[in-house]
Image (tube, rainbow, N blue to C red):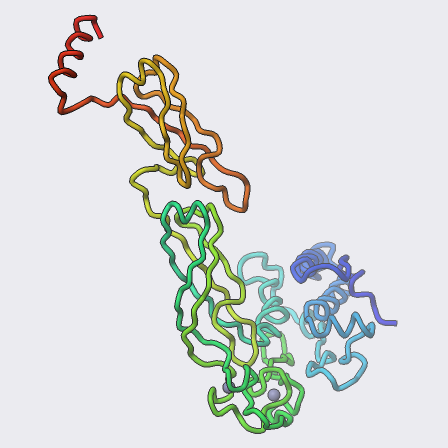
Amino acid sequence: MAKNYYEILGVDKSSSAQEIKKAYRKLAHKYHPDKQGGDETKFKEVNEAYQVLSDPQKKSQYDQFGSTFDQAGGGAGGFSGQGFDFSDLFGQGGFNFSGGSAGGFEDVFSDIFGGGRSQGRTQRGRDIHLEVTLSLKEAHEGVRKTISVTKQAECDHCHGSGAEPGSGTKTCPTCDGQGTITRQVRTMLGTFAQRETCSTCHGKGTIPEKNCTVCGGDGVNQKNEDLEISIPAGMSTGQTLEIPGKGEAAPHGGRPGNVYVTVTVENSSQFERRGEDLYQTIDIPFSKLVLGGKVEVETIDSEVTLTVPKQTQSGEVFRLRGKGMHRLHGRGLGDMYVTLRAQTPTNLSRKQKNLIKELQKEGL
Ligand SMILES: [Zn+2]
Ligand SMILES: [Zn+2]
């Protein structure tokens, strides 16, 4: 019965790659033979377990069959696991593993086991970064914008397959249908077999008999496209919206990139925005501040009536609850703060002037 690699690393099948890596690093550190209390046997076990569980393809083989094909002697994988002889690595003197400093043991290991291998099996499309300017009202209500972009998009002729429609496929001659090629890598620790995605078939194992005559086999070409962008209510200047999968298409059927839209909200001459709240100042006649009354107040999307109590001081601030900006993600609305200010009248008629004089005599 094969060893339980999950048990060895103290993780379980649902653990993420990150968790597995973390567990491995911790144990490799602990059992390192050059350390006091190190344990070479356990150390080898830990490394063997990590070698399998850190490789998505081997891990899935192991999960399914309880071993990897390499160990079983099958020829399915390109990685010759038997080539790992750890006594070669750690038996020799003169090489100091107990680094701990930069460039120490763990870095060497991650170069061998983690670095670069099996990553980016297929290329991901590029991200597109856009900038959009909104009026304050648009920021409040949310808005749909159509933006024309030039981008790599799926080829219409072959629908991204890269094959001329009607043509068949054949086994990739470079990798002989494996999708991967094995490369011998020499390091100071010995020679390792490193598996890489085949660059001819991009891991598929097959290639078209005839490449698409429009895109030349990449499955993508340059196009102008109208992007429909739905900007949610409540965004502020500097915030960025992510639209997954709407970026450039990747050649050879890889994942498309994302679109990132960074928002700028224009200043309004009427309202000052502070977070989700809006501020405005309204000039009203002195008499209304003294006697009280009603004032029509424009909000961002409607109008409300504000009741002014009698003997209100100029400069007094009133809060209109829920009359501010929409909060992002539908979490209600901010408030509006209205400052009432006494308006000094100009161009007075003779009668008005006389009345003001009367007031003045009364000490007002
Ligand atoms: Zn094409
Ligand atoms: Zn190939």
